[in-house]
Length: 144
Image (tube, rainbow, N blue to C red; front, side):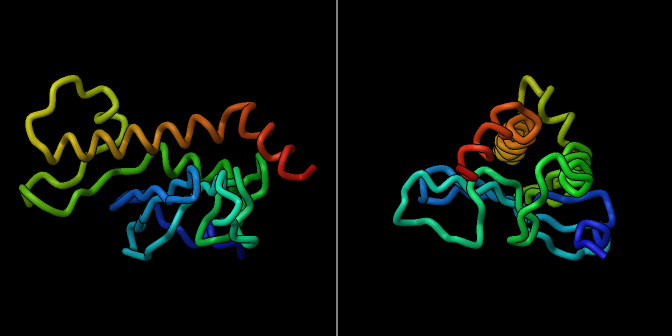
């Protein structure tokens, strides 16, 4: 059984991080069973920070590279598109936002919503990249 089959949607995005390696992005998530998952897209533009286990330009789930245009990758992208973002501070009554609602939010009423919208935009940038032809081009460059 692949790890993606263990995920019980919806995914909740609880945090995002940016590495000092030249472009890697990651997300801390949990599913409806509160099981935690790490999703990341390593970039490694700085050679000194390269980690061989993480393939640059490929989507990873808990440090496992997913196959390019694989069923696992498609499923994870769908889970990310349908995910929610939870910010765990400020107003405890409003800490979870649907990602799609945040992308369309034009005026925010709090710093909490600003943080959630920034996280949603970062998530959508990763989703758009993984679905693009550039993603395949990067993967082919890494193979060569």
